[in-house]
Length: 271
Image 1 (cartoon, rainbow, N blue to C red):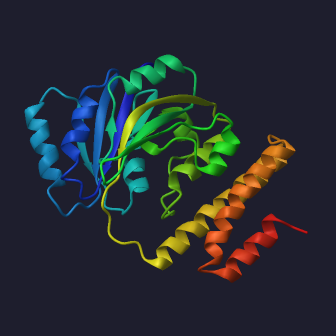
Image 2 (cartoon, rainbow, N blue to C red):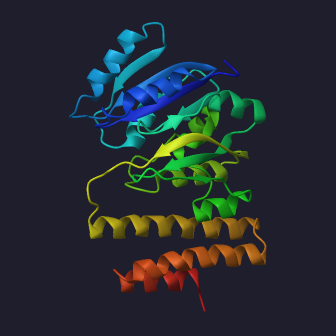
Image 3 (cartoon, rainbow, N blue to C red):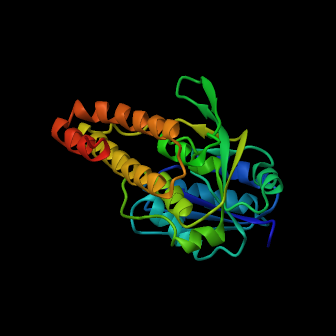
């Protein structure tokens, strides 16, 4: 099991995407099992998964169900079934490029978290690439330490922190990685794009939801910065970079909630 991975795919109304997603997993090396976790889908997601299973009866896939809403709950539900050293979380509208998992394990067999690069495909068909920042604390502050489908995790490190925080409505993956960092997990950087992140049409996010998401983002960055400063892992120039990143987000929040932005500013930038 040392060089094998379990793929965990949370699903909510992804009937249009799940077949192609599973095809990308089928092309991977070193996958022990794929766990598809339906999260109360109302479309034909389950039917699509079962149809794919029938076409590939020898592929090790299990369909699970999680009634608690949200991808973190679905991912946690599958973690208890993991028997491998490695875990690949994969959003159902994303794709793994060939050999993604085995290439990353070969590169960093002793890592706890492998932060990977990715291709992004936007609704208009254009594409861009992204690579994680080498300095992990700065990467976490900037939100540039990879994305769920591009990264790879050791199962032991996830068990150590008891998986995902199911109470969070946003910023879940960077909360996860920050808690892993605090627990002493080792991070490695794989700049090569090995996943395709496809932009998907979602329902319109209300102004209040955007505001709450930004507050959670900033609250987490405040915690990160305090932890990094207390541990002395950033030099003065790196602290300035982090403060500027946070300040840019505070300016955006101030347009919709000035009083909260001022309060947060006074905590992060004391006189």
